[in-house]
Image (cartoon, rainbow over all chains, first blue to last red; front, top):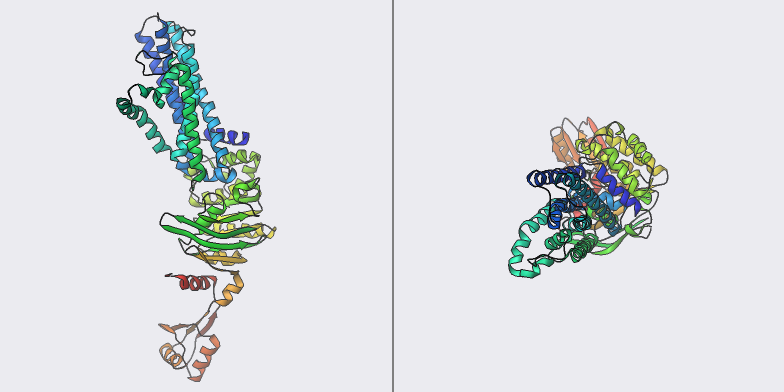
Length: 238
Length: 294
């Protein structure tokens, strides 16, 4: 398994997609946190500390994107054939990719948090203590999003459709379902991930579960998508 | 040994492989022939664990590909030359495979040198010609120094020099007691290197024979050039021999001796009388033509 994990890391090192994703995230987090610092005074409430720290949650979306690329790019470029010739037990390949995506998700989250803290602590006196659950939640949610992305990439077998589906779901899908589901909308994936990074016990509007159930839900969604991806991958002709 | 037993593959309404069975012995070069759409690529991909059969089995040493303990050291495969990340370098591609297989990176450099693309090793594969990508595929197949090579149309995109290189390489590979199973539509190439051929059509086995035996079964041709070709054709017709006329040339499937006798008996001058040995291509066309329309 360690060979496969190293090979997956090497695949990312030998092309630039991961670099562009990281730079895109750094740019977006940087712009966001600088805008907040430039337009705000010193933070005076714990709630505001958490709000500013949540800028780092941008990493969750980029971790999802990277997870999809880790799996889906192989189908898009046809390199999955070579991968399966070297490692014909497909589930092992999927788990190796999931491990890499989890590690990269945590790394992206760490970079986003470091950048947020680097700018916001001196800029608006952000309290790391008040924001600690947000920071932990972003790490967990990013790790889960990376794994979920691998599962989604395996389900679609192509990165393009998987990326489009993920973002359409987040932008439109959950909002539409919220009309019919009312309070139950908090169990949908986007809301569960949002709860994981919220750093609170639940929202006042009752549309989010608490942070820890959110983190657990995010992990369950990631596991579910990986299981679905593994089932489809083992049956698929490549 | 490769063994394909009652293999079937259906894609919705289309049947790609239809009860195919054959064996490929170790230590030989076996050609895998069939017209386009005969099911060659599907069969090879099932053998390599990339496609799931609807029924039947395709095994290597009695095991399905995914059951092989260290497949890259047992089997090398050359499939489509398009399966590369266009932004990854040739060296990067091979190093990824080396890492996954637990091989040293120096093996990648050795093989890039061996297949003749070491000077392009640092370039992105997207900029490679089809021939260069085929060579990279061969390098990838050889990483684990396998005992068996499975190649699907490896001559596609290769220039004459590349084809000659591939032919010489496969001969040398097989000379070391290793096995080659190669599909191709370039029958002349297969004829030059294969000991045996497996011919399929519409997903079914048509023939599996030694190349020389198969060629012997095919009907050869006799070519004649004569200043009196039209009269010769008439004389041959009277002797019950059919011939096609093209200017001063005739072609017939009758033996050259018989044609010469008819010409002599009728006092017809011949400028050329050539007995052409039957080719694998003719044998192949005869066998697959008989299957057409089933």
